Image (cartoon, rainbow, N blue to C red; front, side, top):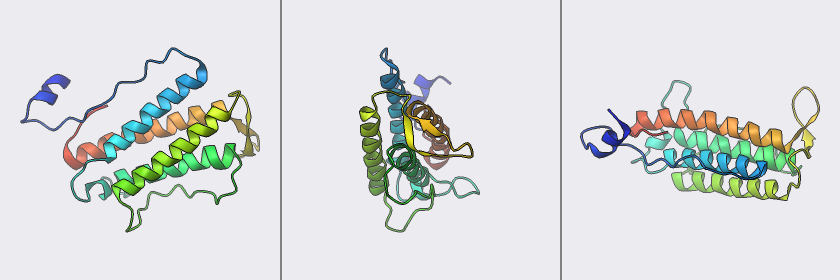
Length: 177
């Protein structure tokens, strides 16, 4: 069955509306940010609009769930852009996927979007993608460049976008890229 048939046949699983990848023919920073923003919005789209608590339900034995993935990605944004690159004084994020009782779809997505806005502002202030982060990470003790951080966040977000695709299909049958 083709994608178009899935979208129009009401007797099949629902299909999610999926944005196409950016077609940016620009400088390196704009291109990297366009792909990262595309992936970020894809993850948000997968986590939104589920009935009841389906976005909180674990789809695998490890306990991974859609809102937990968004919460984890929020922490990754804060860690790499705020804490590592910008040298913020906040506590180091824990990267956890555990949800608090008060976490809702709206609050988790709003937290992620706020982290993305801060991250993009930090990237915008970076005049050269070769600039080193304020803090070193890993065993090497060498600070990462903004280029490295952007590529890493594309990889991190893409990996979890794939997880989100699977979890969403398990939750309500919606499919999409």
